[in-house]
Length: 333
Image: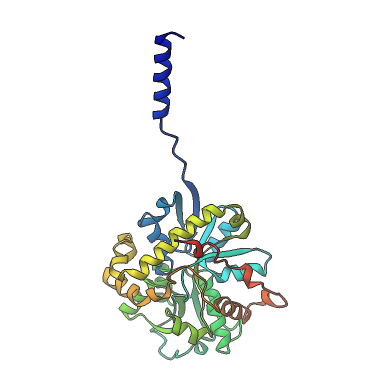
């Protein structure tokens, strides 16, 4: 090999060492949120807005679905990899032969409120709603689960009231204004909008752990990131990255004011009243867990609530240990 050839080889080798390695493609994950403008599901949008997903090497797409039961169906059909919705679906689905697990427990209270229309001042308790039509986000949704339990607990059997799916936000408000529903279960910011105008009042408040224990008999873990157990087992590194991002969002909520958190949200989430949005968040942000860990005794309360009215639980044994895992949240640094 002559001198010219040696120099050419050396140059080629040097050039090769300067070529950057191809960037690793971000892990693509699609999550369905049961209404990402609802404050109960705020951690999902917050993690996105703060860049926590991207920092973990994830390409997360958040899809919006107003009712948790529809989000659940999208996951079971394989259209999305996970759902940001209520943990109670994990318990309910086990009775139907589906193994679904909460991997990050976002809250230990539902954040829901049973509102009654101001047109019905005679209604003082859930028992007074016998024969009435009650608004829920969807049939088979967590709002429907909780509504049915509260009515049965108040002595009103299934069949002596009607559950009507009306969604949340504007559609819920319109249903109450038009007297299609006389009461209904919804979340912030819909609650504050109706209270501010005087069109509704609070009948049952599930926005704090204390009021939830009084109404449901214990801690009720609600908003969560849940996924199919088989998918979790096959994609543990991706699930860990999701857990990292969600727990960071929960830590942000715990360490920042309601106004600072609201500033990270899209302006249209305020529905034209940022002050009311901030106040509602200040009142309710204690519903969120600080670390994504399932609260002790929570699964047992959920099982007791669902068993209290649902026929699908008759004669069934539920293994609660297979409805959630703390494996990933406990590894978050």
